[in-house]
Length: 286
Image (cartoon, rainbow, N blue to C red; front, side):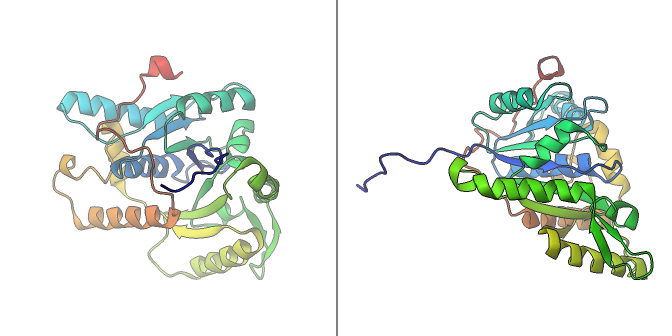
């Protein structure tokens, strides 16, 4: 039998995935719920925290999913859900410790506005996902470009915030057994036409990624099915529950699989006992 170390390293806890930026309408919640369900299909135990206590889009999506399970008498892979939007960062960390016990992943969905809890969650992320629409309006969130040359002039406040958080995190990595933060900018709703504007965004993202250290991945295209799935809480991965799928739906599923691969997440350790993880009732999650 191999000798075990006298003082094994403490577990770093569940992997934190944070979907954040300070702009709405970029597909944060839709991307987040599909990633959560995809991880559950892999057998991972997933907890989610919706930090937008006003809209609660992620929470409501997963709540709808449970209602569909009950209505159809089926069991679907899913995630526990909680809402936290009012309180201090310390209180949020207490909540994370509580619901993250025994979990592989804790996934955060943040509001599309400047919010202190969202900034805290982003700074504590193991994997930070920043969805953006394919336009310079959204690019301005992370960097400003020259109006004539479209070269990056400076970082935005948000990019500087994440850059500082990563530097602080790097100093604590060894001492506190923290993982290195992986920042992924996800391009949602990319136009199919190879327009000049899209090529300029490609170049600007490539330039900025070298300066700040994020990776770039393609996300989810604009499709009506994402809006249609919300009331049922279903996702593109629930093949047996969606009826007959068209070619565009199959392409969308491939997009999702490519995004999951790009996230490069660790394999789950706490394999779920069954495929039907239940969502915490709203009365318990508030």
